[in-house]
Length: 255
Image 1 (cartoon, helix red, strand yellow):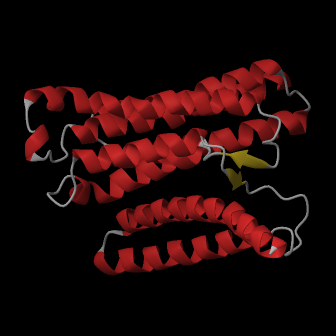
Image 2: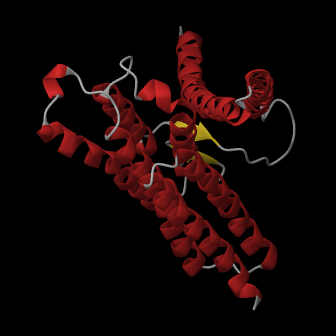
């Protein structure tokens, strides 16, 4: 019986992804965000449970990837599909052809998430870190951004080409060869985990400030969602900056 427990947890992740996708198509971004977060919770614990019970296997790995494609690939794509039907279009693209075509570009996120997960399963370099942005982080970013800032994203200050550019950037970040740190600890020393500790401290500050601001104007969930999107943005920025800093310091050392 115990060998099925991790797979049951993974299936909970998959079901959350299905619910999130349905909610996205029915224009309920907050519900989508909630179930993506819940799916990420199950995704975190299925591997831990498998290792704790000593029942890790290839089937669990494959099932985990399939569930992740739905929760962290298809669900955010569905959010983008729906957003493209409401976002402003510039005069150059203001016709039925682009109204029909542009929403389907949202599914690029699903395709690149699948590529990212396939690469992760085959890449031996990603045991203590990531190469490219992990799919849960990307999905949480989109869900948090859309659920908290839909009024801005659909206002005249934003438009479909901007959304497409941001989406293409996200697709590239999923499969790029940029090392990103993971919140895994071999030990808890400051020197070896300085970047991770700084990131966690900044996230606590961002979320605390977001919650206080949200409570002051009665929009706590929306404000915290913006804070979560900001934390994901911070993670990507710090992940990209760290190897760039090492390269720069290496060049200074040579000189």
